[in-house]
Amino acid sequence: MQVFKFGGASVKNAEGVKNLASVLQQVGYENTLVVVSAMGKTTNALEIVIKNYFDNKSELQSSIQDVKKYHNEILLELFENTQHAVFKKVSSIFEDLDYFLSRNKSPDYNFVYDQVIGFGELTSTTIISTYLNEIGLKNNWLDVREFIKTDDYYRRANVDWEHTQYKIKTNFDSSVLNITQGFLGSDANNFTTTLGREGSDYTAAIFAYCLNAESVTIWKDVPGVLNADPRYFENAQLLNSISYREAIELAFYGASVIHPKTLQPLQQKEIPLFVKSFLNPKNSGTMVGKGIGLEPDIPCYIVKKNQVLISLSSLDFSYIVEENISEIFKLLHLYKMKVDVIQNSAISFSVCFENTYNNLDRLLQHLKAKFKVTFHENVSLYTVRHYNEQAITSIESGKELLLKQLTQETIQIVTK
Ligand code: ADP
Ligand code: ASP
Ligand code: MG
Image (cartoon, rainbow, N blue to C red; front, side, top):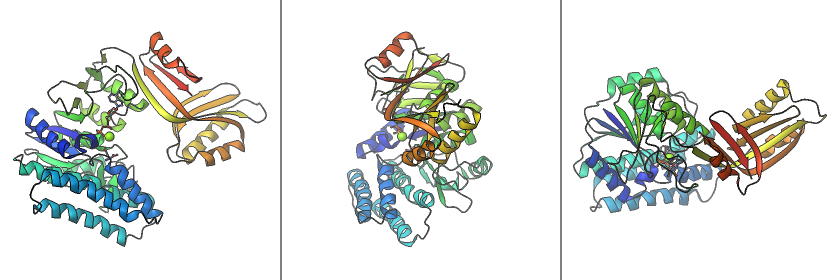
């Protein structure tokens, strides 16, 4: 039993769907579960729909129309016969979306978000499953919400492992090719929940864990895990193999190629994770597994842009002590800032974070009442694992250095 995950980039158009079929034909699809995300940037497009809905924007209808049109164009390229039942099926999915929005009375943004955002995955898997059946790759379409059970912490739901394990053990037929949605689950009342943005990798890992799968493969637009994001670094090199621990560290520091939650369930059962190119499916890509360190052993670079760096000192030049730090963290938590680096000295405390929910002004207002505050927006945080002198120089050259912190294996540098 193997689990495959195809992300949005792999199925962003009709050609991508055809390529998915070709990958399955090339590498084999017996006893395979295929987890699929929403097509292309559909999740972002649905986020706009949700925002328009809550802001009572006149653009609501046109934003829904954009999503419908995008999928319809893909359908028209995949199915010559416009009388094919798939057109009706996809229309009826969108009717469900219209129906939900017209009937909804809940003012809970996060709840509504999860009910709406899932239409991306429901549509993509319906199109892909039907297309594969059409060309002879017989498969079952599964509603993932009948398998992955979660709490009702909408937008970042926590998996109820016991219940999920039970559902998968009793209802999942692993002897056939199955296609299902990434990212989604359902709560005790059967409302749709989501596992957090980019959560489809995690879905693949949850199934692999519960099914004791032999392996998980995530198919990407890159040859595998590289020692840097090729969008920001030239000459990024392929890592042939890395340990779970190393992959967890890279994901934690922000290497967006693997969702951070994906690795722990796989590590627990020692299920290998392959990251491979959907354009060259026969290439070996990267294997993440037990105890293999990092091969080749080279520095790995991670950059996070658009971070905020604030430095605080007390108004009366007294020391920054536990009490102040705990207060600062309470506020960071209150405003949902994702903290990346902290550094403290006797009279000052610096913290670099991501202003995920645009709460910076309110946070600063709060802090300024108690501390002397300096801050920089739009800074970049570079993390280098397994750094050497040359790696540090290459990051620092030509930039204004705001903060630097070293541990034995990792250096973090904040620049302007
Ligand atoms: P998916 O379609 O599965 O959602 P993503 O776009 O989330 O795929 O992830 C693939 C992208 O991750 C690549 O195009 C690449 O720009 C980026 N990326 C970031 N860090 C790395 C890395 N260390 N190695 C490879 N790709 C990386
Ligand atoms: N479609 C979701 C997202 O874009 C989940 C995923 O792609 O992993 O966040
Ligand atoms: Mg992604």
